[in-house]
Amino acid sequence: MLRLSQPLLSVVVPTYNERDNVAPLLERLTKALDGVDYEVVFVDDNSPDGTAKVIEDAAKVNPRVRLLLRTSRKGLATAILDGVGASRGKYVVVMDADLQHPPEVVAEMVRAAEGSGADIVVASRYAKGGRTRGWSPLRRLISWGATVISRLLVPESRRTSDPMSGFFLIRRDRVSLEGASPTGYKALLEILYRNPQAKVVEVPYTFMPRERGKSKLGTKVILEYLWHVIKISRPVRFALVGGVGTGVNEGVAALVLYLLGNYTAAFVGGIEVSILSNFALNDLWTFRDRRSGRWYSRLLRYHVMVAPAGLTIFFVAELLAKMFHVYALLALFIGILAGFVANYTLSSRNVWRFS
Ligand code: GDD
Ligand code: MN
Image (cartoon, rainbow, N blue to C red; front, top):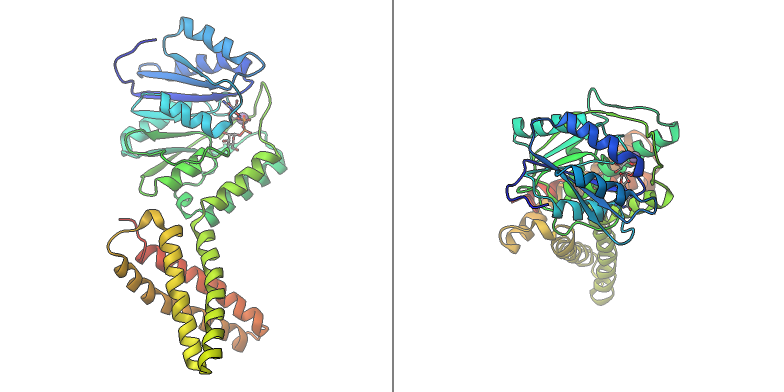
């Protein structure tokens, strides 16, 4: 199909064994998008059930339909990335083929984007007015757990109530997919992480039960998700650096004590060297994509931020131990957790802030 003009909307639909869903999906999209200039890009991984053939047949009679056929199963995340890459619309909506994402919501998402100037529109099951139908308690629990984990570990995902959603819109000229991870199921999470500045709005919707074909979400997908979250989690990287820093602190203190025999020099030296090594690791790794200004200005600001974090540890531990009679080492541990939160929050706001 040759089209020279850019459509307003590209709908990217990854498919794997969705033979019987293609026709009903297209039928409902056609109705819902009446009057909109759009294309539908299917990304099929050579499904054994012959989905590609069904799409090719549909494309013969419907010029809006395109097929990106990949030779073997390469996974949902890369299907989405490849589909977005092959599409041309100003807006791209990514949706499942199985009608669990009602095609009628697509029109609402485009309207929301046009009306609000948002860069990302998330169709959300957890926004007010949204819901899921026909879910087992186990599936509910998995979804809830995955959402909580992403909120805790990937702060960038807190801009939506449903970071696990597979149903979302992006504005192609404002949202970058560069460097996005090719593993995993959660393309939206990755997009939120890579585009911390993008403006996000939500449209509530009802996630419908699947009527034809089977879900591909299994244990492997869940484990991949957890690994993915850890990989893109700044707080996890920050905590690992903090762990290394504790070792550096102790090591330097021991060395100074051995060489000079002076406690004060050992404490001060250990703390200062660990601040320097923490700064270096966070600057080169944890926040490497958020460096702005001069390095020594960041280093200075990092030094300033360490003091309140240190005080937090001290006061929380003191308070718990003295007023609430919490066992001393436990009180210290909770104090360190609180200090970690303070240090992370202050550092990400004041040292490696968005430029
Ligand atoms: N090309 C391609 N390759 N498509 C795939 C692959 C793959 O390896 N795996 C799955 N798909 C397609 C399916 O054919 C379907 O259109 C869509 O991706 C979603 O797959 P499902 O198997 O239906 O996933 P789900 O319903 O369990 O999960 C959906 O809902 C979750 C919310 O709970 C997805 O949208 C998830 O992204 C979402 O988090
Ligand atoms: Mn599904």
